[in-house]
Amino acid sequence: MFLNQDRIGATVSQSRYVIGHQQPDTDTVCSALAYARLKQKQEIDAVPARAGELNPETQFVLERWNAESPPLLNDATDEQLILVDHNEYSQTVAGARNANIVEIVDHHRIGDVETSNPILFRNEPVGSTATILTQLFADADETISAQTAGLLLSGLLSDTVVLRSPTTTERDRVVAKQLADTAGVDYEKYGKELLRHKSKIGEKTPREMILSDFKEFEFGPAEVGIGQIETVEPDVVLDQQDAVLAAMDDVATERDYAVFLLLVTDLLEEDSTALVAGTETATVETGLDTSFSNQEAFLPGVMSRKKQVVPPLEDAFN
Ligand code: MN
Ligand code: MN
Image (cartoon, rainbow, N blue to C red; front, side, top):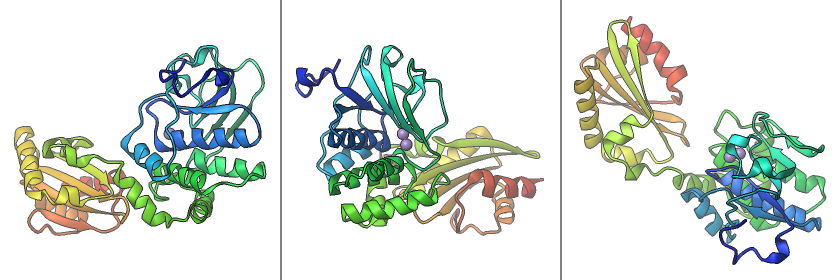
């Protein structure tokens, strides 16, 4: 049953709904749109749907490619569903347990969905569902329009952080180039534009920023806090460096940290700017083999707190 009945008429009430997961992301929404189109090209009755509100990035994508939002499906009871980009009941649209799941296209671990009949279940360890859908168009000998290519490219680039996530496979790279050609965009340039809409850092206070992805460590006798902000626009953080450092000083004092280290990680350039507060910053300089100037240091190639920052700091403090 759809909320916005104006978009869904009686004629499609026997349709299959192509639908992604709750808290929809760009890959989930664009995959639903693209797969419904492929089905329609094959004269199979299917309409796209979504299981929740669109995020700002996906809204941008739909506007950019002149695509209409799939309607919201608020209860899938007794409907026929084609699931894309998920296969676990904890992520499905409400009512999915009492729906008839007729097909699944996904790139996640196999979850818990059950069906009464055998179905087409296509799951591949690639960077996005959009990558698999591009292959499904080819398998069906159907061409991809510039608009559909733009949508699929958006899903692929969003899920893989413009091919930089460790989940990216060689196939994702090949497919991204192919889709970008068809869509008529430079995928690197478009990807940056896309990711700018992902983070809403600018709307957080400095204190919220520095504590939103934050971990505490005990390195020998020292209590050390390490925060990380992963972003495509580090300048949004670094332009308010004084306020950010003041917030870090406050937290370090309140919690008696020897050091509060903040990594501002540029996802596109694949490096980090470190900001530091606390009394034992010299030990951080030794550990990271760097030196701070005005409580700031540039760390080329550093993306991972877990792999590149915590081990050397633990050594330096012990
Ligand atoms: Mn997803
Ligand atoms: Mn996905």
